[in-house]
Length: 109
Length: 114
Image 1 (cartoon, rainbow over the protein chains, first blue to last red):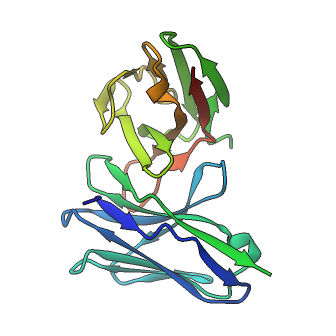
Image 2: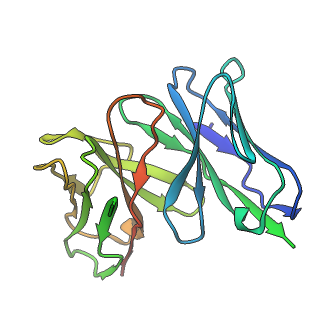
Image 3: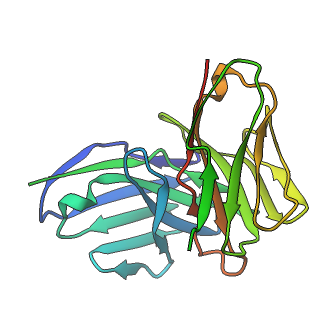
């Protein structure tokens, strides 16, 4: 079983749509959680940290369910510029970041 | 702010050659790491450092060496390149403190071993 699992997609959505990605992790001792965005042939960039109480940054909302070991990312009012791969990342401690393989999002006009 | 700078951006090596991938950050970050990214596998940790003079192995350390003589620099050395080391390599850094601070990545080095 992979330590961090994501649906690879691609998710094809029209502009303005709402889309949600899910991620599950296997290590119950994981300490912190992130969503990164990676554009084609570019480096990953931090989109947002994920807090137990859930958190929002503009059109993006992240949720964490520690009991189910589940993380989600919701994108509202999708833009063409949101097209990218979204990486779920779990910090298992001692600087061990474990990356999911990513979910690809394609937003079309 | 330059952030995390990696050089070179592209490199082609012959099997058996050695080389050093450079990584420098100007944010005074204590934590630095090297990852490789291969299709369908996600980023995997090669080596990491929690401060100058301190390094440790990650998930896939074989064939790579690191050192951390200064806070700013964290070079990755390939001892004897193999085709299996063809990959995209990313260096990343983070400050100490709250663990919810994410890593900042360099723009990557695309390495091909023939």
